[in-house]
Image (cartoon, rainbow, N blue to C red):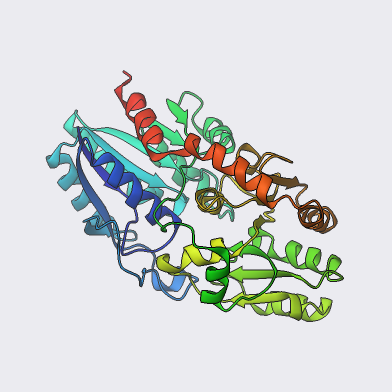
Length: 374
């Protein structure tokens, strides 16, 4: 099958780019794949981080054409005409925020005029974590051009059906992020990172308000009588870091916190997850989380809020703990229970038993079944 993918990919950084890199690699096994990505993804004024680009090398060696300018309508018409003339059987969009919906909708509208290409959207989110005026209208515009939807959690399904009740879709859980290498011996990982602490819990990824780091810091205040437990925060701050520095100072927990305030390069990810006993996701809101599937790939227990699709992966008392959102007391109790009852080995074994359910082969097979439906 001839497939075009329009999505962030390397050299852009982040979870969706990583997702698309692996997806394209899997699709390439049996299909003719072309990848179109951005020449301008976000205007610099709207991007909260230090850079939009991955510094490390692209291990998957996925080639792409940098064509799309997210804020130039003339460009959208040019890209649409190019894909229309290429006549792929399927055009796959990665969708995660309404900002891109006008560009995606315009391109899809033009492409469909060839009366051949079907449009599929892989929806990481439908409703964004931080909403803005116009989000619903933009999203409806793009979704009106989409023939098939792949949804990464039941929460995303619910959000989609509110907008497009007759949508043709499949819920396919987010596959594991298998592109970060093999696990490393825990002692060696700690030495590599100079994190020589006996007990480490990990908060990983971009720091944004909805991810609830403030709740986790409050929980750390409640367990500071256990000085062996250290929290490693590894990721670039998309909020003012001073907010969290002030909480650390207020609760006098600086001895229990280690912050790496930067985007973690792909080659380094395995060390952070391998060094940790558990990964903590104190989210206030979520659809699903790529961080969860990085943890699954490395066999790491999960302690997370029962929001969105997290409860579809984290099974309370089996491979981790689910806690009420915005509840630092319950989160602190779960962390303490994890160590007091020595749950790491049991939860790790159970995580590994579940990992095959989230393979890329299964994901792509189910995707292909969906697009073969009339």
